[in-house]
Length: 164
Image (cartoon, rainbow, N blue to C red; front, side, top):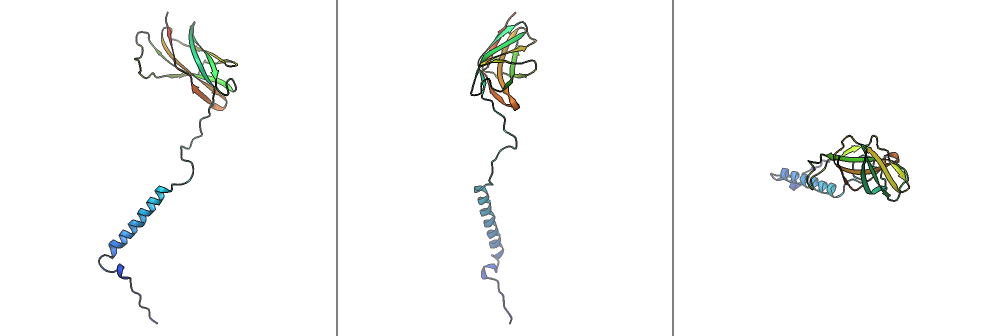
């Protein structure tokens, strides 16, 4: 028994190749739309550990010039005030008195962690910041640090004018 297999009519002739190409393109287009509509599951984000947070922050920050150091004081606010605070980071910028930054201009703050050890009594914060410049304008902010590298929010920025 001999079978006679014939190709269907739409596969014959001069339009057969363009129809196959069109069919392949439609399948690819449909697949691309499905992939775009249904992305892979899982959380999208950078592959880094989240920063540890500390709710304690310094409010009402004030500064005083005392014999070669700047004394910063304020009150500690937040859910975990006074609990687990191991230190602080002071951000500062200094400008000469005759060349202050313009109003609204960005101020590049520098981190100071060495030589700064806070004193914390219940909900009061104090630290002494040794400085080399004696006269000028200081811009200061404080961030409390806790166990395991936890960091709190920045305090409000204060300005301290030091004159001889």
